[in-house]
Length: 335
Image (cartoon, rainbow, N blue to C red; front, side, top):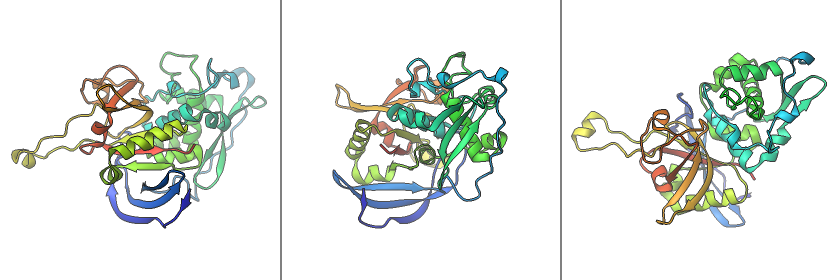
């Protein structure tokens, strides 16, 4: 796309994190871009770049002894031979922003995941290529580190009773922890602080993608959002949804007649994989989402609506998503 006007930064606004953690503040950056469909307004909620000089040093990895090599390249993607969002399952680590984004990329651009991960038969270790905001970095992952990720309740299904599940989420999440912290303990500590889906998108693809924020919805309307998401998925671009808590009233506002916003059935401060968008028989625009927890029960997400169930998927009206403050942004990754 060709830029026709410089972006500008507006006053900072509060931004939620994406897994039970507090975040800092970032600016709102608005710029005009032109593509084959004509001019469109793109807004980015800008936080710190995901990679900077001074990135933690990753210690070198020793080869895995032959008798300790449980996994190889054939274990990465399961019977289908391709990664998908069905392979992820976030458990005890607070990095929905990364796991959901990895699932979205796997759905729409599986070759990106496949090209990023390789197996070295000589060392018995895996290598993952990730972007640190400046350069592509090869991060080595040992067999012991994969088991460590499983033991921590990481983002694969390997610790959920499926010993033959694809291992690529565990390999990639381990590499991401090392990229963030240098050592695993420091890296997982960073992941548990939460983060932004746009930064995870950059780590995986080299691009932060394009955000559709609540401000854009107010300015351009729901039809614009629908068209952007629909076109992105048709073009094979990964899409995630980041949520905020719905608006609530304090006691004084309640006395004055204020009522809490209705629940939308989605977990607050969380990131979902956008699987599809469609119009139902009633004319409602519905967004089909995958929770990286692989369930959407009322007890797990903290909201009780007709849409909540034990299914990995939840379908919510687009109008319900973007109303009443429960929406932070959609992130659309590169094709």
